[in-house]
Image (tube, rainbow, N blue to C red; front, top):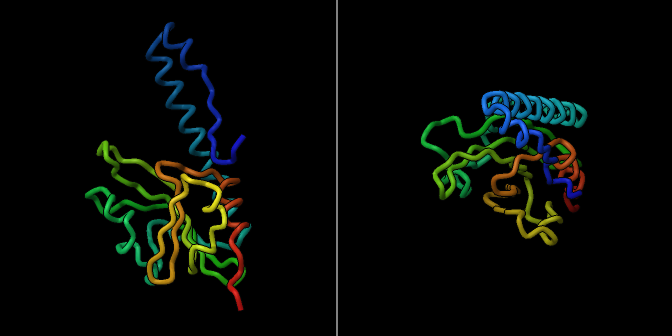
Length: 166
C-alpha cells in the first residue's frame, strides 16, 4: 500500500440500512479518532526530530503570501494551523496544515512541507506526478492537493531531504 493512501473501513454502509442516525454518529466518532491518531503521530514525529510547535504562526522569513496556495486561501485569516518548525541536516524545515478553497469552493485541508532550499530537496517529485512543488525566495514547498498526510508519510518525505551542498 502506498504511504499516502488512507485505510478505508466500510462498516458504515451496512449500518445505514439499519439506522442512518447511528451510522452518522459512528462515522463522526471514527473521523474524530482518525484525526486524534493522526495528530498524535505527527506530534510524536515532530518532537522526535526536535521540531518546535508554532501553532498558527509561520516564521517571519517564510513568504506564504507569494505562493499560489495563498491565492486559494479562504476569506478568513485562519488558513494554516499545526505549524511545526525545525532543522534537518542544516536546512530550515516547516510542515503545517493548510486550508484551501478549490474549484468546487469547498474548503479542503492539506499537508504542506516547506524547506529552505530548491526543488532538489524533494527527490520524490520526479516519480510522483501528484506532488506539487513551488519555489519562492529560497523556499520550496511540497504538497499533494487535497491530501492530509499522516506521520509515516511526513517522515518519508522529510527523510528524503538532502543536506545542503557545500
